[in-house]
Length: 128
Image (cartoon, rainbow, N blue to C red; front, side):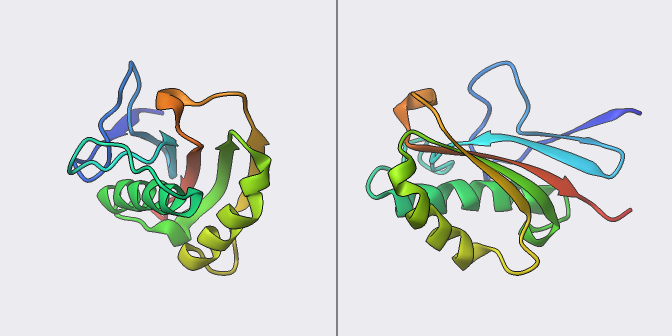
């Protein structure tokens, strides 16, 4: 199956040898997004809620570039540097997602790129 690269200026450009997202068949794999504001190129720093909201906004913009939405996400993987932020991230998720919620895994890691506190990757099922 051929791969199609999904890219938008409304999300941070890749900071390494990877694509923002790759579509193959009716699946879109969105690379891990961090709280970078694509307009300024600067990290959103502040509360974990502000960081999570920016990450979700970046994911939503990539979904939009692929003609889909957050509602089409079937799986999320959330990476946190501190699992004590789990409940705050859950609250942010509930503001952006509705039932039926995507499947999800949340993992605590020792560090993330650019020393951020949260990174989220997504798998999207796009209707053909």
